[in-house]
Length: 412
Ligand code: FDA
Image 1 (cartoon, rainbow, N blue to C red):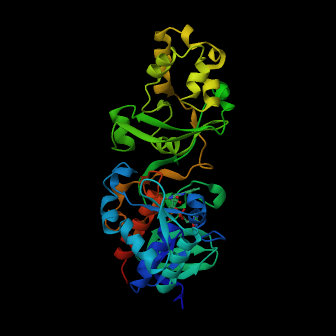
Image 2 (image 1 turned 90 degrees about the vertical axis):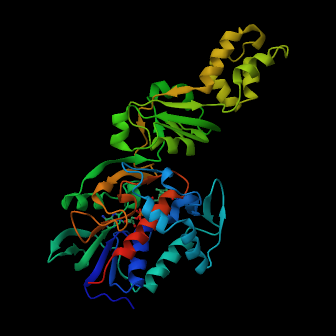
């Protein structure tokens, strides 16, 4: 039976991946926990993730796959609770999984099984639920916190902000954690959409719009514009590279490769795409010259999807290879191996998988996620300036930060 008497050791706001994990861990340690969420349905982002199968972790998780002003911040939580620990939890609940691609683990069945695991773990910890329940205000009171909510006043000695990021507002995502963090004087790293499609000037994109739906494997790279810019945003490597699929859309580019590079991209930056990685395009075309009457289009279609070759060559499509000087084929090969593009924007939070930025890691203790300047206040999950690559890393951060916080909370 939930112990819900309106006064708790801990109030957790946000019953998503990180919030449920913290509530369960703290509840099972004997703390009186209330978990509050404004949504009608539980953990919608887990439900829709990984195409309904939830890519719940990545076996190769390390701090190298996270962006943050302090990329080392996540190290302690990830070391204390890694992918194997989450697999142990799934095993105890009889949930089976499979590896799909480069360490990415998905449920065999459906993402509902992950939600069920967390719900049952919360039950085992006697967690009290307030859902759906909007929180109107948060105030400090007698060293603890007083929350004015739709379901009345809740008092708790400690408060955990776990409302995630702003991606997919249509699912009820908000900036609640950032607003409350600001209220208590915590610094915020400017939030922005990440793991998001990139868009281009409509006119400049017009020749490629017809390619919507074409996908191919490419190598993408991005270079941070200046050392100052790098330090301001994240202290990752100057050059970032991904070898992943690219997808053409009506408005621009998407697919896993673009989502990955989008987290590093800033307005004004170019991105570089090698559209035929590992292929000596110019040498292949020059060698094909001896093949009689072959056109440039036919030769390039041997390397690429034909629709892409047609759009790329336009009026040159019908030219016979034998009539084209080697120097022009070399220039064509160079353009294909380094297609430099200047995106004009992103598809925004509506299409993003995550928010990057968030509560500045300098404000938080990396072992407990407690705010230095506001004892008793904790921030976990996506609301913190820790953003993972695509591939299960964001859930692993949610589990790890949730467990770190759940273990650090105290009974008062
Ligand atoms: P999360 O978003 O899980 O939970 C926040 C909770 O807070 C929600 O329940 C919300 O209703 C609640 N809330 C928000 N505002 C509130 C307010 N004002 N008052 C009360 N409650 C409020 N990651 C990954 O590793 N593998 C994957 O396969 C995917 N796939 C994926 C697909 C799509 C479409 C999206 C949008 C995202 C992913 N992600 C992902 C990212 C992953 O879903 C995300 O990083 C985690 O869910 C973050 O966990 P949190 O607990 O921090 O927030």
